[in-house]
Length: 287
DNA sequence: CTAGATCCTCGTCACTCCCG
DNA sequence: CGGGAGTGACGAGGATCTAG
Image 1 (tube, rainbow, N blue to C red):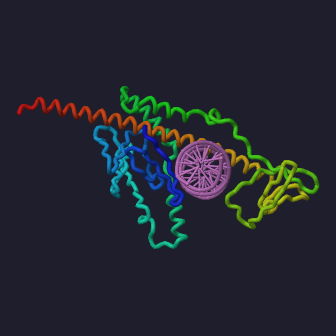
Image 2 (cartoon, chains in turn brown, cyan, green):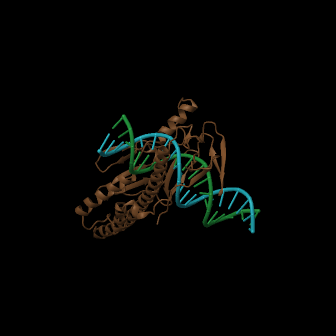
Image 3 (cartoon, rainbow, N blue to C red):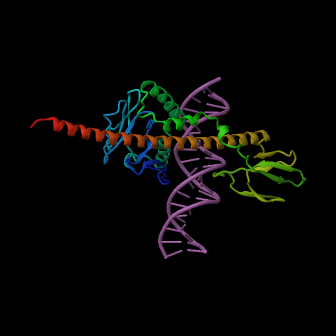
């Protein structure tokens, strides 16, 4: 079984997916298209040759380092595959700032969501099962993988534990409940204030102040309790969304791995078949 | 055994896409 | 057009591995 691995290149910020077997690493973030797992996609590398002609709906991705490489979508239209040649494609005559912005923009070119991809898979599976009951490529493994996405999120996960709340003790003795504010980018004044209660000490950015007269908690006196609640809700939803997204990503990668395995087996079988037919043909040919 | 390296998972932010 | 959903990027922290 191939091991597909996500490598996070911190310096370049690009994420590459690679298998230990036949697929050279392809920078997915640099592509506006994605390998659709629902189709019989074949990845052809410079070193290894995978024959695609035997596949009826074969999508061929040529990664031979040529800029003319294409991705053929199920609908027949061709999309150019951008090859990222480490640096040479990036650096024009841009200032460092512009360049970093440009790089960031390029990184943010989105590929289809996993939900979309898996929906496509589901649809293709339906079409596939209609088309061919023998289903060489519609193996049950992949069907199982796809079906998971229809399960509600709540069925998979326990309710997320809400972020802890800071208990701020004010001089008047009343205790405020303030959600933990965590941010990598504490800007503004930048200083941090320490609060303490019976359970220990807490550090809060200076921007966050407690208005002791009104009892309201606010950033520069404008954060209302409503806003705090909204933020809590948003964070909780995003937390769950991130979990779900990661689950789908894993599912998608598994799906691709299954497909690679299926295609490798098919390829082997076809090579064997070709060999035996050749032998048969040679025997029947009178010299 | 331990320090450093590497991997893995999670939460959050920032951004894009899509729908009402 | 606003807001929610989805997802890449990033950093933190724990787990595991490995050389000394």
